[in-house]
Image (cartoon, rainbow, N blue to C red):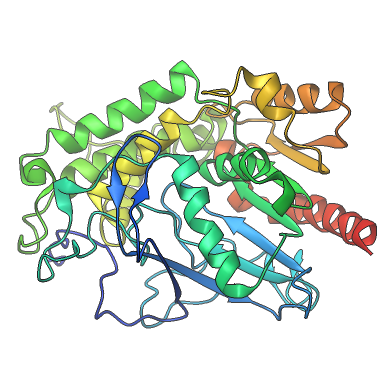
Length: 390
């Protein structure tokens, strides 16, 4: 019989740190969030690969997607229950070549793998986690906390900032918020602002968690295994998993194959595709946190480069560095037109910008799967940027 799922899959102080390093900020004054909340004593977990050049000029920041974390490369080990999510791209001789570049990836604010989030101890509470007391964060807040990593490492300017999906949102915000601190940008399978359909998907996932009675309004961290909001989190992940792949991939892989025989019908007989999304829901619950899922999916829905900046064109006018936008031909969650919109505005404003289309049937997840295509575009672009910086 399978073991009961933990109430949270969050990494917590006292767990093996693995390859994590930690940057601190807001130790002497509050960190005021875009939405008005405040945090103190923030810890930002990050990992690095390669060696930093004496002038800090070879550093590349990789930004992770919704359920990613700082463990972008490397195997399973103490503190790291899963392999690096971009392991095939980061390493000696790979597209993000650690013999040439110093690669950095930080867990985002509100996450659950070492950076301050809802499962973290609330300052002054004798170890009690934030839970429902953790405020709403935005992509802009995430980027501001990442500056602490650059400070600690001694990186005055990133050679490039790279990321897909929610990571791509961070990339765009780096370019708009800190244009003098980036040499180039690579937003992948992302958008300048969340669309109505993207918000609808995110809302459905959050409601699944909120309706789970074991969520307990966000205060569930003392629950026993099997008594946490894992069913709601698994359903939220199932909804998202459907949007990450294309109809062709689901049809080719599963068709109408069944798990239980259809000799006589019942409501809960399953098709193989149902078992697939159930598996991924349970898999996520073992390594992620329901409150973090709520916060980060909300941050994605709030993402809007134009907010408070006089419109999208004015916001993008702050980006003047070479930019490579990468889209995916079969992506129905973040369709290519969203990346092409950014490309068109940047080009019209005179910014050196190109768009590369990844030809793949795999949908949104192709930026995690089609590593040959993504890697070739990345490597060529970074090589050109590096030459320009010499």
